[in-house]
Image: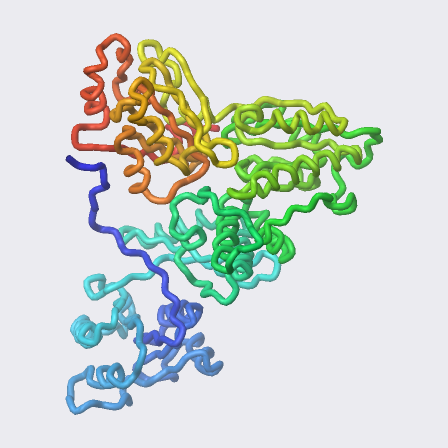
Length: 588
């Protein structure tokens, strides 16, 4: 039986990135394309040698200038030292044999339309010479003589200084539309914040502080040691902490801010803020009043401020209530936001309003919670309107209750503004009705994480009930084991019970993984890195609206349930994945 793994479909490329320090890129040809290839190689810290008929005198202006600046070397094809053979490519063969560390060869003088284009026979001989020495070759406009191809690339700049940043993107259509690749690249670049490259540089600087002396260029997954979820807890800092443990904790927090902070906030980080995040230290005395910029309400004369506990909904800005929108855009002097509130919602806040993001990372949630509450009280005492912005609904696992009591104890009766809870919106975006006649008569919502990370007792199995588990995807194996608990057969869920993992609900990169309790852990491990936040939906409602629908679950015996699952997933499938929002949501 198939486990639901994707079947490979040929025609793609293995897209890699290379750093070429102490390596050489060899370019044949001297036109503008050769200059473009040379520039790309130089930016990758490669040495560059250009070989062309006529040497530097025949090179384009850019190559001549770069040679004069000693950025690259230009050699004349006709005066290359020869080996004992008299073949046309003997000079190149001898050059390759006597030059160390050549990583790539780019043949650029085969471009279509060039009156001095190299013949195919010549290109084939060069290709064979390079392949004999295991050197990859790219031959322009001759795809069968290419071991690799170039993507349509863009390197982002600092919008203020103009300095080029570490961030690059590349698009390939695998030969199906080079011009279209350039257009897609432009569309992607124009859709991103101008500061996105600076955000990458700031995160890189923070990584350098987190791992002093470590190699900066590493696999992207290294910030969480290859773990597919950024929410796996790490131990809090202790007096006996080793350097390895300290590095693990700091890199965990680098991964956290990379995942949750808005790009504009990352781009604006100072080194002091980086060190504060990495240290995990939380001040008990919030910033002085002068640290707050002027607000739209700076001329108001008020004796006492106020605190609004506001729900931002599951993530999509169109799901904000009017009350929340008013609080963010018209009332707030200071916004204290949870880390899960997406950048699209924070972007609605006027630039004159200060926004602070909670550092509520695994292992230090209590410190971050206290810091936010203290900051709210301090600002309210100065007469400011403080919006404490929560993901979803504040009272659905949002710790709103303890904040209400804390603020009341310090003299402020907060206003709680409801929000659309992901417990309801998440399943809906996944095409799952949490209640459905003939399938699900009741709904239970619970958390997958107990206080201070302890296990929680989950509701037992009821065929007519939908179970929604919030904040449990990072502990999926534990949650599934608890649901299948063989020690209490009266509460245990059947292994074939449908389950959906809904990640990033309502956001453009939403992903839904549907499977059974038997296979869901394997499924989530197989579909790639996790996309927090995620929720679990367990029960027969998961399959109720699939295809033609199945709304007769409660009218049939449970002995039919395994056959029902087979019809839903397919007899040879153990899971299914759907990416993106439902059709029609682009209108919002």
